[in-house]
Length: 161
Image 1: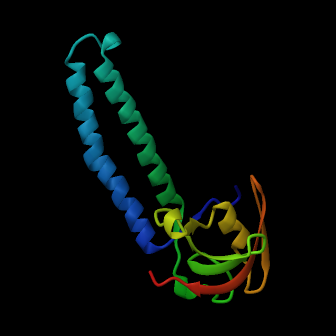
Image 2 (image 1 turned 180 degrees about the horizontal axis):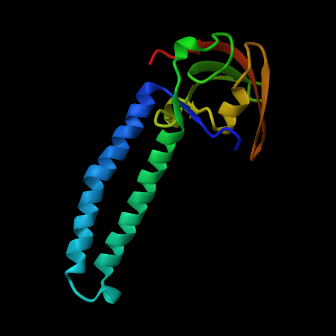
């Protein structure tokens, strides 16, 4: 990717940062203690507790590394500085599905704030990418595995987080 920076609000950044600190400062210490106590049980080649604890430790470290990578690539966006008439990061956009004749509202957010159950979708998702840059009245054609979604932009506003 030419630009792999991730737009994020201050709230989303702080949420990811807190999770990474908790995992590294609390969970990693717990798992390290499990590894140490399992090591004391003897022969490591046949010690299932030791191998399970080491695997958990590796998976936790990978998750911490992923969170730190997101933080390193993140840039804080101030929604008040964004255009009000275009679908951009932080907007709430109401669209009409032209094939299903139904309206749906999405909020375009960054990592740490996404919640599909509340229609808070990542700007990097296929729907988010398809809607970015559109203005009221424009149609977004978004290729998805089951075909192409056709959304007409009906309304653009900013979420009141």
